[in-house]
Image (cartoon, rainbow, N blue to C red):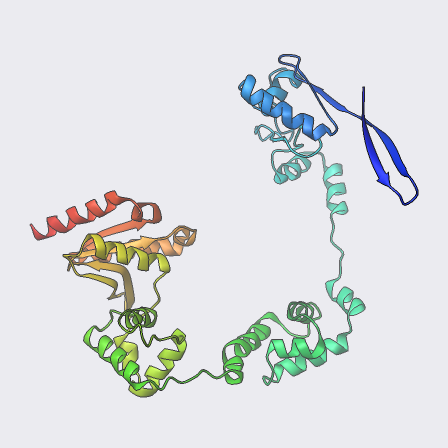
Length: 375
């Protein structure tokens, strides 16, 4: 069966009609016999997939297993026992060769010694990295570039612009050619990033004495309540006509210049995430009758220990945002120590996930805990 299309080309002299004959792809549903015809086979498979779902209530996987594998889904040949996955996209529907990439290695290891020896020889890595880079790159140029960078007078960006070489390439080739080692390079990069760049771009000093005085009085009256970021937000709420538009570091530097190291003891240590600030506003809205402190500091094992919230005088709350940070072993141990510390010192303790923090029932739970404390 063929399908014709007519294309018209408009020329200055004449009009040309070109007739093309396109062969159609064809797929038959083995459940009901319906035939799907389109120019592309992928379109046929797409329509068949939709037909199976809507008319026969079955997936492509079930359809393939039923009609091509006698109802038995194939398993991984390595012997792990897992069933193979179906590739339903691309040019065809087929099962993967192995359940996972590691299964091929397991299959090879289970073979005889001759096969294993051949596999190891085939995958032996004789690539000499240093020789490759010294052959393809000009060593003298990269040595001069590193000498310039190690003088600690130019940032990595300056060296990159000077030699017209991307800074990622510079670092990669320096290490590959053994011009430097990882420890030395890290030290130079840190100096370039945190010290030299500040000397090249000094921060602007704030000379607004009225704003500085207001902020100092605020943290003097409420010690350990505000971080530098929260202090700027609080100031901007009450001074709409003259808001503080400085960066956190610039403001902190200016406060240090005027009031000295006392600022470090008056400010809350550490920055809270935007999610914690949102939760703080939610708590203040629903529980206005209790004093809510964002960040509470204690001393645990000779070091400072911080809790995210203190509500009233006895309820400590820790907020764990989504992510893998709290899944590591060291962080889990630290979280458990903090929980035990709170309970041993007469505090009620509550740990909230992101999902729990967004649930109105959590507010009810917190209110009940606060009522039990006062009763």
